[in-house]
Length: 314
Image (tube, rainbow, N blue to C red; front, top):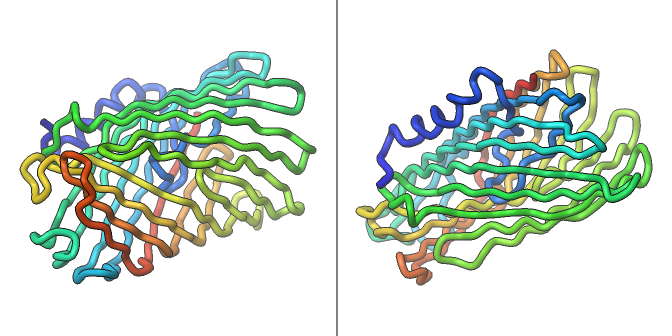
C-alpha cells in the first residue's frame, strides 16, 4: 500500500540520494508525464548531469455538466544523466517524480461525495537513446516504467509503462523536422498514443519555433540571457485511486491543454530560471471503477495558472 504525505518525500529522496553527489538534471515546468523527456546532448565524453524543480498552480475553474469547482497545485523534480557514446550516439537515463494536489469543491456531478480524489503521485524511470542514421538523420527511442497513484492505492495495481520512437532530419543549419510516436499504458483503459512532431526552425536571428514534447514553443531571444515567448501542449495523466476512497481502486484521468506566456532567464549557459502564466483552454476529468467501467466524465472551464521552474546542468 502507498501511504500519504511521506510517500512523495520518500520517492524524491530515493531519486535524489544517488544523484545528489553528481547533480543530475530536469525539464521546463509542467511537461506532460505521458511524453518522453526533452533531448539532452552531452558535449564531451564526460557525463552531463541535470537537475530541475518546477512548481505549478491552476486556479479555480467551474465544472461544466455538474456543480463544483476544481483547482490544483503540482510539484515536479527531474534528475538525469547524459552520456556521449561517440559517433553522435547519446544515452540519457533519469527519474521524474511528481506530486499533484487536487482540490474539488462540491463536485457532486463527478462523485456523490463531492471530492472524488485528492493528491496523486507519479514516479518514472526513463532511458533515452539516439543515434545517427546518416549525416542528416537521427533516430531516437525512449523506454519508461513507473507508477501513478493516489495516496492509499495499491502499488502493484498502479504500474505504468511507456515508450517512444522517432526520427529527426536536419534540412539545414536553421531548419530540422521529424516525427515521433509516444505510447503509454493507462490503468483500466486503452493505451495513450501521442504523435510527437520534431520541429526546430530558426525563423530569424532572434525567433525560434520548436517542438516540445506533445506541443510547440515560439521563443524570442531578447538577449544572451533573456528569452520569452508562447508555449502550448497536450497534457494527460492517469492514476490509480485510493483503495478506501469514494471510488475504491478506481482510476482517474486528467487531460488538459495549457497555453502559456513564459520568460526564461539564463545567467549562465548551465542555469535556467523560467516563469510562466497562462490558461488551460481544455480540461477534462474522467473516472473509472476498478473494473475499467466509465463512471463519470466532466469538462471544466478555462483555468488560469502560473508556474516557476529552475534547471541546473553540470
